[in-house]
Image (tube, rainbow, N blue to C red):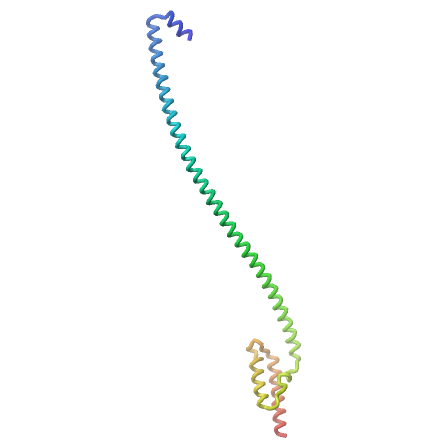
Length: 179
């Protein structure tokens, strides 16, 4: 500042002219810099508005994605609940089936014990009430149908005993007929 004041007060015409020229250039430089600054400020405002719009758009997308993710999680939770319920029901059914299987096995064991016990039974019970050879033959055929080894209730040992008893009774009827 002192240098400017000194030139203004004591300066020569050339120094004043040079100061004037410098001030003019400096003024142009400041005006140009001011315009550039205003242009940059306008550009910054445009970019700021564009950035805000992009942020709004991205926020909407993020919000949509969060909503979709929330719905997917709810859907997944529902599916998981269905699967858990299904597996628990399968487990309950499996336990029930195991109990039934154990019960059936126990019954089979009991039946096999009875079969062993029954194998010593008197098969003449099957022919009780038979009074003639025709009734004997009919009862024999019925028993063969029931106890044939190819049937569900079939038993080879019982068939052998039935055959033996049938032959015995048949001979008894023939002997009685002859006598």
